[in-house]
Image (cartoon, rainbow, N blue to C red; front, top):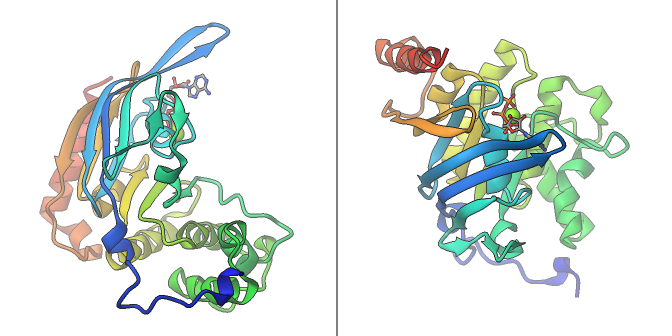
Length: 279
Ligand SMILES: Nc1ncnc2c1ncn2[C@@H]1O[C@H](COP(=O)(O)OP(=O)(O)OP(=O)(O)O)[C@@H](O)[C@H]1O
Ligand SMILES: [Mg+2]
């Protein structure tokens, strides 16, 4: 029986992302990369609890271990020591990845990494195809997601016909295809111009509010981190440790007005000062 012939759950029965969203718990995580020139101690003693549906931004200087931590959270990399749990389930059991934990995670990286020979809709629907979802259902979902990320009308375009910002939106839509309960993003807007980035921040804020997913978002931009997050985690390098965790209590939804407020400016200034203290 194909997926298409399975009767769909009514919306009253279907668990929403908000229902399924899980918290993440990182305890005593260390990461050491063995290299030919010796060991690189990338992370040390990382303890972090992320609540269900929370938006956490990770900031810090280049090389402080942000990507390493995100890759550990996404199951792409095993920690050298310590534990990672999602929704109370261990992510790694005796060095083996617990795939069930990561099945509901969506990942977005700095590069959109779309397949150039697939259309936008086919790229977005790829995770559904890999799960055996039928063609008509895949198409319907891809069209819906194009609407969510502002790509309506570009379903049948190829990635080369899109701007950088549009490609990144397609990558976000692809990450959303399976309704992830956890969204892990590594500098997803790093390559975009400032105006597009501002728009993407507003869109991401809306997607987070609508879906209720837990989000961990890596960025070099302190303003972007503060604008989006419930909490900003600042890492310091060699080895990467958590220096501070700042709660951002600014009302939502946030807007250009929020960014212009004295409170926003004060939080950004304090975080910049903390980063500068490391020099
Ligand atoms: N595969 C690897 N092998 C060896 N060392 C690595 C590897 N990946 C990362 N490192 C080292 O681990 C440390 C943390 O790297 P990571 O990529 O996590 O930093 P980052 O905070 O994401 O930096 P950036 O802001 O530049 O993206 C760095 O010293 C880096 O050289
Ligand atoms: Mg990185």
